Length: 624
Image (tube, rainbow, N blue to C red; front, top):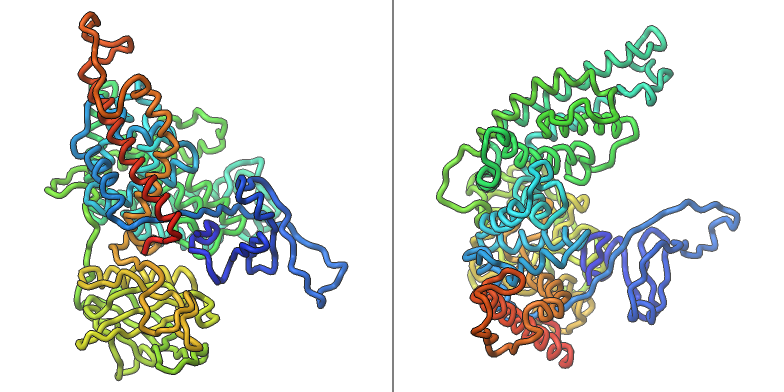
């Protein structure tokens, strides 16, 4: 099970839990909400439910309660061994490697018709990760892009909807371009947070009494506030535009290749001088409207800041994001909306648009043999320190007593060769763990040591013996970043562990699975695949194909009715010699025959997977 409120598998975690006996979902904020188990088995509840406080006698009976709303989604699924997903994986890869001109029955074509809303975004994330792991993200994006462009008649609406193509490109940018985003925007976003300048152009929102902080002469007039705010905004915007247009060399090659292919596809669909800006708008629509502007508006969601902005800073970020969005639109809607009070910024925006258009040309001016979004296995340089900082360290000990006080503070440095540590940054004597010895890097249950944000580094010595080092990070972001860095550094290592224990061996048993043997096989799958970014979990091909399978099951009956309602799965339909060379809907008989055969193949693959799930369920087994 996975808790989508904190993106972790259910267990004794620091923030949430699930009691199957009472049907209680609890959060470690001294609050709870109850659902009857029968209701969960019949139909998952959807709506707003009162969050009740845990009864504590020491609290005053007359105390008032605040209001808190949580949106939580609980899913439970069974992931089979990899061999069961191979036929579906082959169909997915075939969809983008050799697409059919009349492609309506491939898994990707079916998924396009079936998914909507939040489900489409989740699916796009899984598909992008899946094809990234196979080195085919470029062909995958090109496949979806061409289908989307072919369906578009008005270039002004191109990629403006939340289609599977738009969502996939958006997720691709986040997966491969997050570090690039940080390099470009983090300095100026940090300045906005730290300086806390009052900026406002909308006269309806101006609080003239609050402007004393920007003047020693008392309250400013509306015109003075506008002029002061305009100067501050253009100052910040100038830094943002300079950083963006000067970042061509830092933009990931895979992203530049994807944009190059996108522009080529749009240019083929909309040729002519009257559509000369369409190819730029297609690229800027993704890069500015779906990447830079949202990151400026909500920097915490893009890991640019640890906390959300206060109301005043949030308003400043909103004004900056609006301006960046206008630049991304290449000024097409400038002055046409209701926000006429943005007019003082228009001269600056118009000057910036010419620079951005030149930047977009340079961005796609790249030649490379590799496909866009090939395997992201960028190894850590051997002698370069890629991450360092304080963590609490504890070695695995033969004694059964494992207390929280066994953790010692140490300063760690990670390079491509070793993970070294000492008592302080200046300490000359240090110990090290060779990166080549690392066999697994995984999270640890909070219940193992009654501590949050703990991970384990499992190493193997020259004799073949395994050793575990436990490390506690200062917060969840620090934990994710260390996990990512260590997994990247150890990506080339051979003989990775396929499973490990997310708990600790205490009291003669493992806290996670209660096995009594210290050497017992791990009860949880490891994440040995390459990581995508400091904020992201590693690739999980089996889990990603499992979600694709679940979505395809929803359209199984629809696919059968559309193509196979009057035919057998084993034989192609016989065509009447008296019929025309095309069917009633305009499809050629040969095309219809291929579609029926492809639909039958896909349905058989889904049926085989369904049967495998049924067998595992009957046996009560869970895939390792």
